[in-house]
Length: 304
Image (cartoon, rainbow, N blue to C red):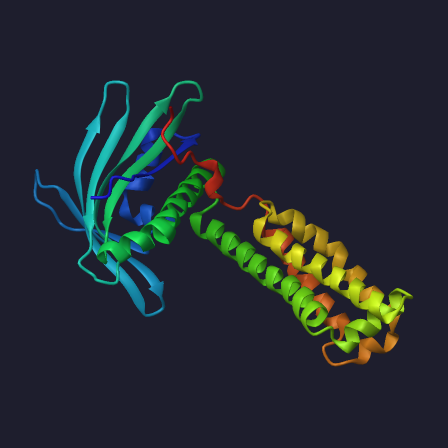
């Protein structure tokens, strides 16, 4: 078993009983935990451990399934509850072979809420190659997914917004993020820096009266600015600020293109339709990106 744990902790303004129900009831648990597509409890006899199966869809026709056991539950005198798990999968495509972990629910007397945390370790598949893949990509992804799921649960309990609605807003926001990052980086890099397209030179020349050599330098500067803005889309945390900024940028770019040459409005892939489409997507981004779930609300290392 790997010695490196995944640890996630969050403060929730909610009662232990409510959090316990939403994390121990499989029909509720699978709604907020992005690591699972489905969780099914198996019939059990008295005094037996509770066994369950789980699945995670990776692609439309590819899914990983595994087994799990709730190997113990414990309640302390101060109200703290805990539940231990043993899990694994025989599937070779799974990056995880077998693991163990626990949930813990600690009453917070200062806030009258609950400190909800989990810690788990697992053994990666595929030997040394699997350990390298796990360290570089999969383990950080699992930690991030666990933290994101905890924040979705917190918002479900505190704000009453369903996990489904939260994930819809989350994936729309970050799909638009990838799209706009691509658009800005592509338009800055390809037509301006790499190819220096004649149309780009012509339009820039209408805006700035300068020699051909200086004009090419100016086009590179504009391309670098657009490229950097695309990178900012990937790095800047509050995406809503960028959506709002674009609601002003795209009308400005459209008007500028028409002032340079009014016939641009009649060209194929006109700057009018192009910028209006991007403006509409920016409006959608503003609407859905307010207060989206985030993994950053969670503590990822043990205190002290």
